[in-house]
Image 1 (cartoon, rainbow, N blue to C red):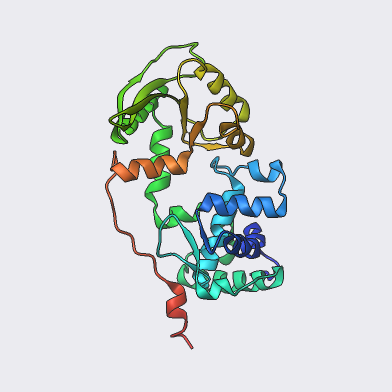
Image 2: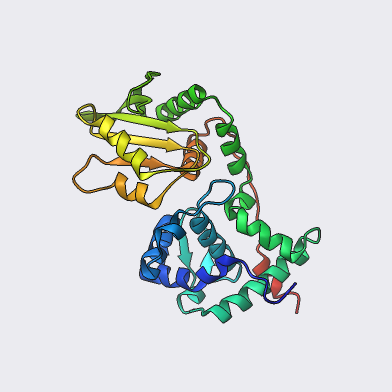
Length: 288
């Protein structure tokens, strides 16, 4: 492999470690990405760029940076859904040259483990694929299935999903010219408190924009205090800010990744499967 060949996500190695230290040594993936973006003052063009699949490029690159740092033993992969620094990681800082050396080390190790693919092929794959899809291939498969449904079919599967997550009296309205509201349900917090929730379903491969979130909120006014937008795609950074804007009804955003997690949690249309990932870092010490 050309020694200059390098994936873009390598530049996030050091900032990712710094972000986790700032967050108290652990954090959710979105928290980590947001902290990196804040610390480096990244512009919207970087934060909203998408891959061919429609996934967010920046978040995907940060996820790949996390994967390499995990292989190196700097992050703990035992707790799913939370990124946590190991003792080694707490005391490690990486500049670009150190990050590059770490990257090349693991590209070589992985290339030997996957003899059918060259190092350059592996790097190109990592630029476009989600590292989680390697560990859980069903994720991309489920998204593909959901995106293949008819618009009304996707609305009805979202209705079933909300029912499984304890919503009651869930209905799909099926009305056109209704401001983008596809249905509603009742969420009971306790025997004394419950409220109406409106929802919108977007069977997207791309991103939901700030304007679309604003339009949905406008349609909610006077009808409900809470709304949910579910999509098989992603949300732009500005859409996320709009959803939680102060002084306006709050809107919950469920992107493709979270949607998959919701299906998996209640095992709706999916069956659990145990997958073991080889810890290459563990076996590396036995090669010397």
